[in-house]
Image (spheres, rainbow, N blue to C red):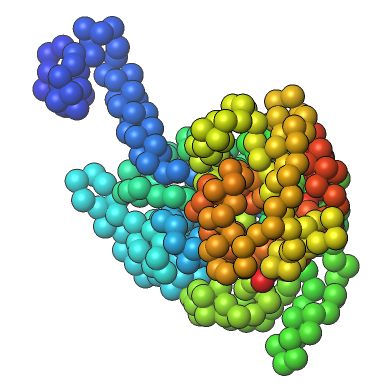
Length: 429
Ligand code: ADP
């Protein structure tokens, strides 16, 4: 009401400061406010290159643990990363990063994120005086606070915003999908047991309904790593997440074992992937970011198609590089003898031609540059280290790992028909 008194024509301060009279445009002040809000949200989201939501069917499967460590891995790979925790009923990110006592500051209506471990962090946990507060939050209230986090937090220019959503397919993931659109995709975390997997199917169906790609399924707590000898023991039956992913036609990102060091790091607010980077568990978590890094490469694929056009190949074609040993895909990338460079017409789903290339001596950074010069815009590999993957991404080459030891023709045909099955990254060196 106060706003109306300031302007006889029914606009408010914001409207007049934008130089417009909303009544004249036939809009109510509420409509105008809403329009402004939507514009601010769009502008804020427009500065974030990729938004990824981390989901799970059930609580306690390690969703937040995976979200935090994936965000840190991306930051360690040189990307600008934000981490948003909208898990109202169990906001554990502040504890995992040891910032539970942080107070949120705001400046000129803008909320400043808390900075930790190279990440810009905002959590609903900063807003709750005690856990019970969350119990009275209803759908519209949750949507309101999520909107505020997306619109009013000073995220700045980010490569990635990782959003940790509560378990299930309720108001929070729905709000994120509606407000942060386009969301580039979802990472779904599960444990290997059937009880958890039933719920994951619901998450996959949710993504399909929302038209949001599933970047992949992570099977967490898959086997146990002995803290004394490092040996992996299957304590529950493992592979349930992998089978489910295969069954539902979504990518499987890999297994992460139960490792007491993960639990300790979470409890003490230590960045696990950073402090335990040499462990197999940390390497398994680092491999999960492969499809996320590939999103940036995908954006620059268009650029590469132009490069190919400059190289006098038809627009719309692509060049797919495959490391070979004995004529088949070489599972260990570093051991390959030759590369097949397959030119293919993606639209017509046809192979145009294949040439065999002998690579220069393998040295860090040489192959991505060399393959870029050959016009490659996709590499289909078996196993490849995280560092090499980042270098390919930096050279605008998308990387697919976990492909089987097949001939280039079989692999490219399967890729183009959308039936290429990729498993876990089979090696990381
Ligand atoms: P969610 O977000 O799915 O509710 P959390 O990420 O909060 O689950 O994890 C629940 C508990 O399990 C935490 O104490 C965390 O430290 C522990 N945890 C998660 N993943 C692992 C793992 N791979 N090994 C050991 N402990 C884990």
